Image 1 (cartoon, rainbow, N blue to C red):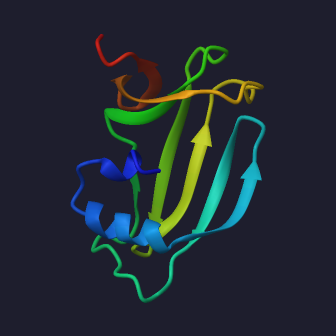
Image 2: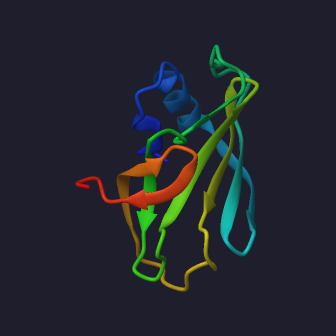
Image 3: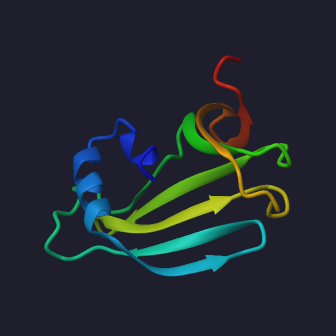
Length: 120
């Protein structure tokens, strides 16, 4: 989460503050990923843009696992100006390995969520 919140977006400071006070209210698994839902207290400032996604541009934080050809991606959903949900997903079955490495990766094309190493 910290790597996603390092993204250079105008709301960076507010989202980092929200994360410090957020609570995970629900965890669910889809078979190819997970969803974490958050509750952020109303006393924490909201973002000016009310509904958007972070970590969804040309470069994103991804988990690289040997058993996943395309790795694992993450999208952070902001709704009504607050952290709402983190989705972690793969294009394959959920991996059995627990160890992974987080990296910033450059996508071949923004609409195509296939990853290439940053050096490419």
